[in-house]
Length: 110
Image 1 (cartoon, rainbow, N blue to C red):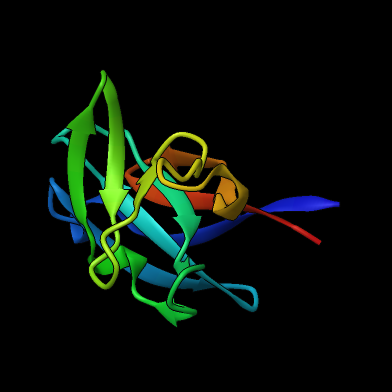
Image 2: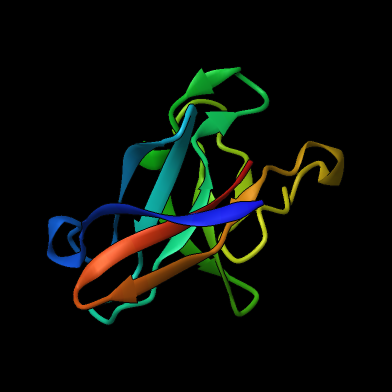
């Protein structure tokens, strides 16, 4: 079963940045690349360093896709699906998001 979880107002995330939120028992990295309402959500855990740091990474564009660069070991994870550019076997979970009346929601799976 899945449900939508209210996280924070859209305006709490500055464009071109990410933040970490606790959704259920998972650390979720939320990214807002532009000034619009597009939000991406990935696991905040870097699978290479086993550290909760991905929300602090840099958003970059590569080959027409948006990526987050881990601040520790510099691997790249595609924002729309969590795919790892350097090692597809270490891709990370992604989560559905939506903005309702200016509030960001993330879908969690029980």
